[in-house]
Image (tube, rainbow, N blue to C red; front, side, top):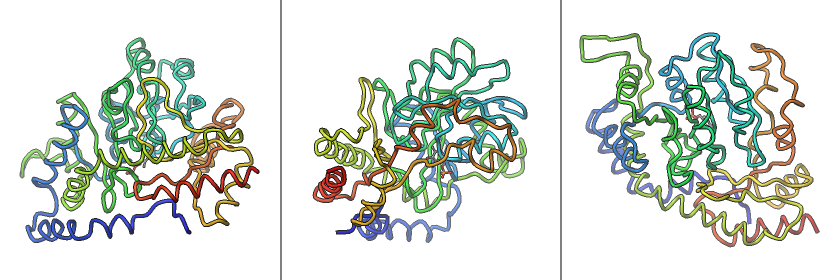
Length: 368
Ligand SMILES: *Cc1c(COP(=O)(O)O)cnc(C)c1O
């Protein structure tokens, strides 16, 4: 039995009949960029997250870059963010000429509010927490800092649609929440897509201008903008898949519960437990494991594919080192420790119970 990490082919097979119909209808309409499907997608997200505005964009990366520029992050400004995220969080900061200032994370891989406070300076223009793996950051604490120092929060919720912190959806704590609908995310398009959410009408309107060349109406250009719109085709697919979002989250949480059930007593690993007030959506299922590299190799031999999110910290990447001053990894003890022990197990909604049992059995066998 081979167990793939993800299974987009199977997703397509299951949805093909229904999606081909709406795709055909969209292409036949001749309306390929902009249009009613985009607005419908934005309404869907607003209703789901209980937020005033959603602006559909072409990627999570553009969502982050646009969001930071909307709160006026400029050249030389500092933005506080964790070092263990996907590269795009920091890339967005770099694209604006700003300086990423890393705060270490806690044992749950998410940014440590205490370290954020230590890193705040006169130059800090935004705090960008990342809800890694679909687990919420300590948003109440980060909100307190944001108020105390008057620094806006831009949330990287790319992996966390539907995640909640004390019954409130992540992405709605900060001034702007940024999401991705990349094929690997829980709510996924058939290509690149993303969106931002905000309760601030002025920022939402500005984002709508900027995503579309700064065009207000046909002949009036308000500002120099970008091409960061979501395609109509992506919106139409996302609207279909949106109908299943609650089910997808439910299934992923059920898979997590199976892992907890089978692996609970195993001393050699640590599971990503939800603490009080947390509602995780398990974009990824990251465990901490002794002898991580050997375990990964062993599972691979047994036909079980796993991943590591992420094997390097962002400041260890060439892209960072070429531009910014050197950082000593020992100043980030938790991030340094975690990157050596984390391994991501398959958790997607298409897994069967017996597949998860098989993964767990093999993990138990490995440590015997
Ligand atoms: C996926 C992801 C992004 C970028 O999203 P894209 O849509 O691929 O541009 C940003 N941050 C995090 C944490 C991500 O996982």
